[in-house]
Length: 91
Image 1: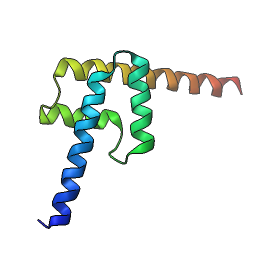
Image 2: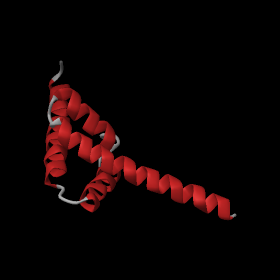
Image 3: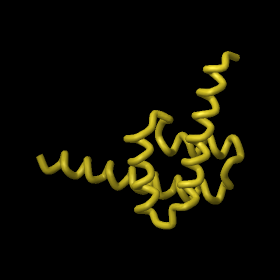
């Protein structure tokens, strides 16, 4: 593995650790949804739900933490989808 590749892996690992720390710091659904938007806008690590799945696989986070976060993210996506459906019916 080249030195440049090792540096990039280290950088990505640092981003993942920082995101895991920020996830744990979220105390409200709004904070989690703000983090989701920030990760989407300011990084290219992929969607937050995918990172949570990776964290579960790597055993970086506890399943109970991940379940709570995923529930919040999925509830929000469901709400957005329902709003989109409702707006399409109005037209």
